[in-house]
Image (cartoon, rainbow, N blue to C red; front, side, top):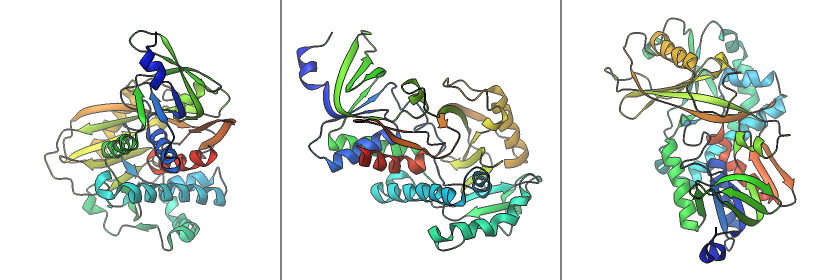
Length: 371
């Protein structure tokens, strides 16, 4: 049941973006800047973005040493270099557009904990630095001289630093995108679950009356990451759930600063405001169980992260956790994002491989070019 006013003003647009996460808002903003007279709306089924945009750990990263080595097992050097370049340029772009203060960006570096399982990677460090030299003009990775100052558990044999990585406040980043959308007059409809995309019509379930509302748009951008599989089953996408936990304020001040990776990047941790530990990941313990679109917490992963905190991160300190949540990322047989046309007037920007912070804005740029 649509009113006269709703039909007259709220249903027809030049561009409709499905998904109000980082990629969706980045696409809408850049399209509006390129075509100032265009009418744009974003449809989001949740109160907040439904995937991982407001649920990530706030890492401004492009790949640890072992992650890049792992990528080289599946991709050529040229492909890996292009992927790192896309991620790094994406991070540089959002810092330039929004500013470090607005993003809560902290340039403290990225670090990777090396155990006996990864120690052979140190022999490959010079090779990776040489590979990345054309992008950065200097060595990216270096070995820390004094690892004992970190206070990590005895299984940590070495710490590798990446001087070009940092961290940001995920909430501040989303607020910056929201504010920019509002300034530009981009409409955001939350609680708008898309049921069907039919040419230039988008059928949405109204959450109060349960009526089906039909929006019309000359162009459509689908930015729902793992959930895009609902509209395009043929896409090489599968969901990957990620667990994040935050501790109560710690009794002793955290001795280290920066964004830390462990176990080839499958585990990550950092300090957040209030002398608290944020730690997440571990989905490699149960790949099949975490290949889901539901947001429950996997008790196996929770126990693993708690144990890791006690044995590796803070072996001499009692840590209690007070918050936990999950987000849904998207992966595929390759780490290359899917950014393509699926019809004359419809594009998709999905499968960001857990790197939405780094490549979300850049994905928006590429989608606008396709549109």
